[in-house]
Image 1 (cartoon, rainbow, N blue to C red):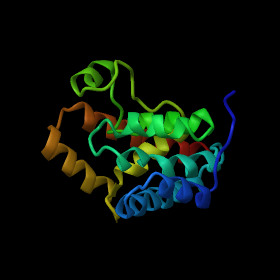
Image 2 (cartoon, rainbow, N blue to C red; image 1 turned 120 degrees about the vertical axis):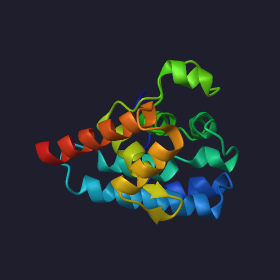
Image 3 (cartoon, rainbow, N blue to C red; image 1 turned 30 degrees about the horizontal axis):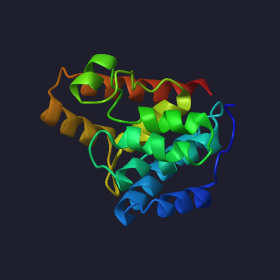
Image 4 (spheres, rainbow, N blue to C red; image 1 turned 45 degrees about the vertical axis):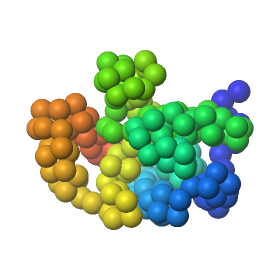
Length: 174
């Protein structure tokens, strides 16, 4: 069953606290949620409740792991909570700007694609990239960080441009 449960923002905070998610991570999740909500107000064809729950819970895996594996750990944690599978998919695919199978293997992730597919997955991943800790960043600031860290022609930079284009198309099409 796909549509089990989509928790409210308050219920998400309780879930984060239940798994001892550090306060700074909860603050980050609140910022990502705020950024996501700002986009949702302007996009008609999106599941706001799903975006909010996904944004709130996207980093729950950081309660046990601060590496890239936090996404996988987060999915395992949330699988115990009987939540809508689409939330687990947002958590799994929010890392970076989307990671293909080949990159996943190099990074020590299970051999799967971690590329956001749905509007909700893309929006949460993009919003997460616009939040550095509890600081909101512009596209240009994040792009500059990604270029200096990964190189101008990296998959990360390419993925970030793709995410922005998809979000802009969502904003314009609705």
